[in-house]
Image (tube, rainbow, N blue to C red; front, side, top):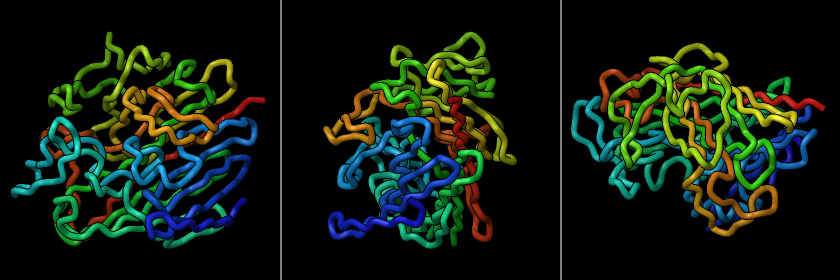
Length: 333
């Protein structure tokens, strides 16, 4: 399966699919959106992530299944940022009048170039021009997928700019460890004592709230269910830091778990209640509905440039943006 490439023409674009395998963990990757299309363990028949069997549904998919989102992941209030110190207007692409995941032509919609690869890794690279989706600065971005030992997928995103800009990327996979139609039967633990309350448009109020006695307290593992929809940032730290384990998703009775380690200060937990079905077949042969998977996205805090107490999203010329996240899968036979 390693070094197996497939190139498919989609709307005049040559989309590459690359498969990697190591230690019983296999992935299928797409150049379109620098996307994790499929992920499987040899001990389990079903896919562990949401994705489409064919490439064409990704062209119009509103769910960001497995994509690399940016140049600013999550939400930016009214598409503006006080931290830049000058007026600019990012693309508005939500019903509430905000910017989301890089805009309508964000990195999730672009066909990246394969810039490097080996038996166990692949690098996808793209360049966003100055003014793209309203952001200042030409930005070169690379997403690297690498299979490490011990059934671990590492995702590293790096970027450099030629002018002061905003830079915050996220990997946007939805996980389902059971293969069931929704996330019932999953439990989650996260090392976060604070979270960000948001308004109806998903914009943080600015308050950094304690998780105690709330539905956001995952310091001890608790169930995630369709009955309690979540789409909030859990605050892991105040700034980017060395790689460390921060969360575990597991399915009691299914003998499978996933540990998450990251450098990022936040983990967006989204239970997928807004998943929109386009009728396309998913990796396990059926169409997806609400709560078919849970998105666990290590990233900067949402709307960070508009809150002085949030981690900085600024990237300057000469600096290198770098984020690393690891997803380690464990199965007991």
